[in-house]
Image (cartoon, rainbow, N blue to C red; front, side, top):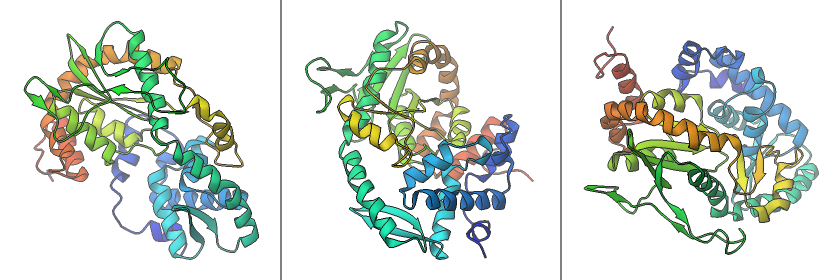
Length: 356
């Protein structure tokens, strides 16, 4: 049996309902959303095989970038489909996993070892240098959001970078975090949001910024942590990230959470040479990388126009679902239960169970 056929067997595929049925109801008609599980898995296996035949060896982030982010729309396969197909290809012996400097790399079985070694000799040091950027990557987008917040006049905000003009971005800038407590409400532990904003009509909004390559799914820790922090201080959750999966939009937007996709990953200006390397299609192929910490037109519009406009309605919705969001953010209930309960509540049904 092929890896695709094995993948299509019944197993935990918690995004499937949203991925197919809800996407269709929302008017998304790309043919990859209309494919059945077997078709999507078969296409995933085909594309994984094709990419690895072309580039010999790759990290999972490169595979996702070339298959989920790039290529014809009807040939794109989302990461939550790629990962189990990849795992099954490894289990069936079609693909191999090699670890170099604590990072996993993937190649097809039967590829000449000399070819693999040559590619790894090129890519492993590049991957190491990319990883060593660490928090400087996160700060690049945080500063862009900070600059966009300073440009607008409709929201008061908290969160500040103190020394942006004092040195370049080879080292981290000093960040003054927004308060962890507001009036009688406090976040548990030593948590803080990236920024707090407020308007008279909507009250507080908590802004989280994630400048990472991974797509944001609704069950990721980045999401539950944001919900816990925002619900603890009664702030409407706002998430800004490179890529946010459709299921995250669908499940959480109906609960009052606001999202913005940047479609880019920002790197420090002083890492421009490395950015050119990892952007190249024959290296990691991260075509969406930009350097610098200035907000682009889309981010400026989101912060300055769209966010203040949507926050009042988001506040009303958030207040209606805050108890569920808090239970999910604190892990009192898991994703499956949260998604089901929030759906039933949105439909005005008994949220404890689906009626026959």
